[in-house]
Length: 191
Length: 188
Image 1 (tube, chains in turn blue, red):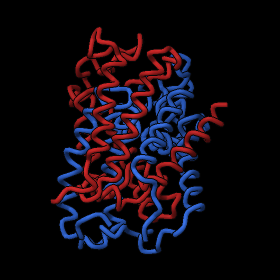
Image 2: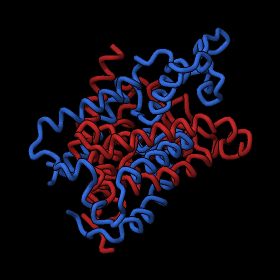
Image 3: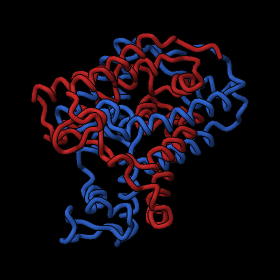
């Protein structure tokens, strides 16, 4: 069953307006960092030395982990104080998705909730395994690149950042051939 | 105030992503297979439109310049993008759209998020070793935190003394024309 979608003109203008609103009010939109922060919060529950108070660091916090300690312990600080802009932003995104679904008819079908049609036709058995592996690759890649589709591609290219164009080239350079090959048995054409 | 803005902008972003169909992995996979370019048109238009207005605001001094944030360019951006692209193609989710998918009750989106949390911790743990073994991956390209059009004094622009609005405006128009002219699908 199809979701009711805005057409590209309306959708593109409104999506662009949201990216613009973010940079006018606060800063460019970014998402993938918050996966690291969430991991750090969980890690911090089970270990005493992930985040330490450190007067010598610019954020006031440091970590024994080199990544969390980067940029003057900024990630360490956000792990210690999770109710910050970036983390709440990501939680609010889930809420925005829920709100849109609540207001929309028809609802997503039970089959589609488990796997999209294009996957069911692909001949690959386990959707959850593929989704899991995809998640690992996407977030590993995003953190290596320093941003994701939101931060690098949308916010980055909006500001004409060199890094945004490089990231987009990488994503589509790999994504298009892999998708064509991986879903070669699925029905063609827009559905 | 910060928290209020986070809820407002985050909530709007999630809502709009869902309304353009980006929370549905079917649409993202079919975009990458070049079978349904609806989302590609949406993204191109959104980037072009927001960029045009952003640089108009910068040119007239009507936006706080410190809100601009240019991320560094280094080889890892391309390598990370390639790894990202593989996962994106097979799963049909990215770090933002999976949150919206979960909001819509999609179970595969939840599994993707678990995978993402594992990927993020793997990178967090491997970062120190990566930097020590392959420092070249993280060394800046073309000055690192640079943009094509000048955004102000904090970051440098590659287009030198050309007026930023003319440079960014030209790029923005190319993106918007691309959105308009891109066909609904390619015959592959």
